[in-house]
Every structure is written in C-alpha cells, then in structure tokens.
Length: 69
Image (cartoon, rainbow, N blue to C red; front, side, top):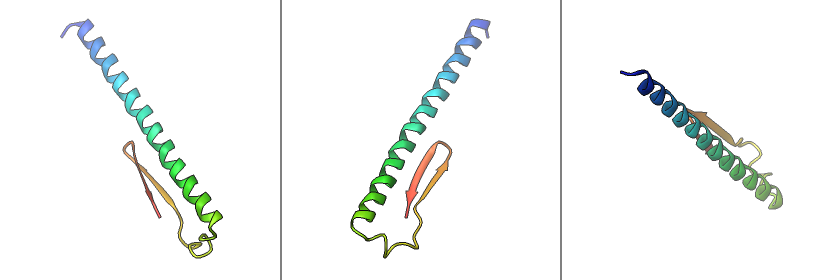
C-alpha cells in the first residue's frame, strides 16, 4: 500500500470519527432538551409531587443515549 493511500485512509477514518462524535453530541443535546421539557411540565402541573421518587436517567454508551424515567 502506498504512503498516499495510507494517509487518505487515516484522514477518512479521522473524519468519520469526528462525524460520529458530533452526531453523538447532537443526539445528547436533544435528549437533554427532552429531560428539561419533561421537568418543566412536571413542575408546572405539580405532578412532580406524585413522582418525586422517580429519578430521570440518561444512559450513555457507545455514542448512544437512552432516556428513562
């Protein structure tokens, strides 16, 4: 394999990793917005009193996030 080909593969791999990272950050921000919206809605409707023992969780693993109540 030529040197130029190796460099091209490294650059392509690096850009792919960057895109995956930015996608993960974007999805994480969306999940955090969902949590914030739910928290505000619960506060406004006073339903947080009945659910005070449930803790919202945001699970992050392998560039993926899952929101659970």
